[in-house]
Amino acid sequence: MQPNILLVMADQLAPHFTGAYEHPLVRTPAMDALVERGARFDAAYCPSPLCAPSRFAMLSGQPVSAIGAWDNASELPASVPTFAHYLRIAGYRTTLSGKMHFVGPDQLHGFERRLTTDIYPADFAWTPDWNASQNWINDWYNSIEFLPEAGQALATYQIDYDEEVGAAAVRHLYDLARDTDERPFFLAVSFTHPHDPYVARPEWWNLYDHTDIDLPGAAPPGDMDPHTLRLRQGIGADRPGYTEALSRNARHAYYANTSYFDSWVGNLVRVLDETGRLDDTVVIVTADHGDMLGDRGVWFKRCFFERSARVPFIMAGPDIANRTVPNACSLLDLLPTLLDIAAGGGPWPEQATPPAGRSLWESATGGRDPVDETTAEYMGAMVSDPMYMIRRGTHKYIHCDSDPPLLYDVVSDPLERDNLADDPAHASLARAFAAEVTGRWDSAAIRERVLAYQRTRRVLNAALAIGEPHHWDYSPPRDAANEYVRNHMDWAEAGPRRRFPRI
Image (cartoon, rainbow, N blue to C red; front, side, top):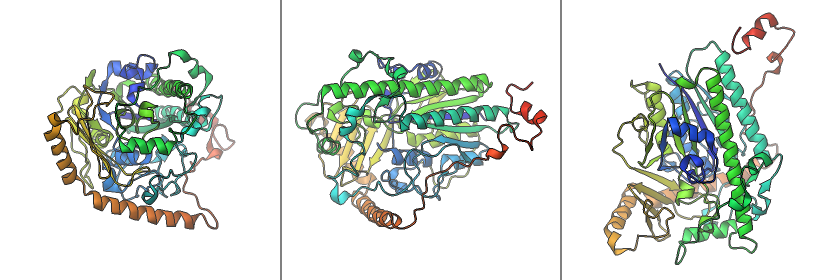
């Protein structure tokens, strides 16, 4: 029997800042409960430390450079198959509630239903310019100037959005339970918290004593690497006014919003339990990327340091072992993992392109994974050349043609303070990684593709801003005339049909 699948995603959640990954302060009881009965992956990475590229790579099982998902204004072509397409072929009903950052006219990408709009625009306005890589995209976009806004509020656009996303998903789970359709379901529920600007409702803020909030670690000794300096300049971290008090305030709100996200995980699991679906549903909790949260004086993402590039990855459900998995893996591995879950040991649907990742199902169910490596790419703002990461075993190698290489042992040096790239004792390892980058990626060709696509989108965006606008932003269809109580309905039949449990 094919299990149901519930995928719950946070936005910009680093596992380091969750109780489920043993942060001493942050409360995540729902994620903790999943870890207590499921598998926790302790070295899961995003395919790219930026929202849209990471999500597109995850959906397609293909690296950023294979599908041209360079930045947050890149279009995911409708011709690229996603796991939603493959799961439909495998017999699943596929539904999305919440954010997936689709850019372009295709706002479904294989999902049969979408319950909400997206929180971000679907056009090309956020296209970066590598010919002016020192410039940010616009003033509001991930700027340190907004740290003073961190704190408490009763309502924000982010809270409005996640309340809609969560409520729609809860109702959909009840609808699935009331439905007579016996096909398994795949439901992706994607929230925007704890993404900046770090504003939390009082009940979540008040979970934490402000004086207990830990501050970012000190900057690494010696000179900062060029990319960190670019990020600090881009977000304004070197401007006057960036204080310890602002940092503590923002981290307090981030922790609060992590607990808020976790509460929705708990609500969704509760509904599965209430409707008798918990024992036949695989629950997966993850995020698109992390948040530096002040480490190195850098906030947000866009780099391959652990807090930006690592993501939580927790699986619980039928056949899943209670264990921690140390092997390096990636959201690129989600597509083959889902196909293994859907296939139940049988063949996968025919693939348009073999997935770049590997299935994690063997690891999740108690087996041994012989692979302990993954890769990632970044081609967004604040660089002028492609940036790559290779994580293998305990080592992480970061390469950009315009920057010196970075090499860390992330197990013995989890804060990545000791760059081993110029250490004579690690010279052969650094040379091997450098040779692998050259053999794996053609940086000059990728750079030309990025520049060409940036030019194209700037032209298109300028043209589409003239005259009558046509927005690609998704508008969920609603048939209000057939909801609740209407005179054309036989309520003696409709009322009991909408009740759960049935009489």
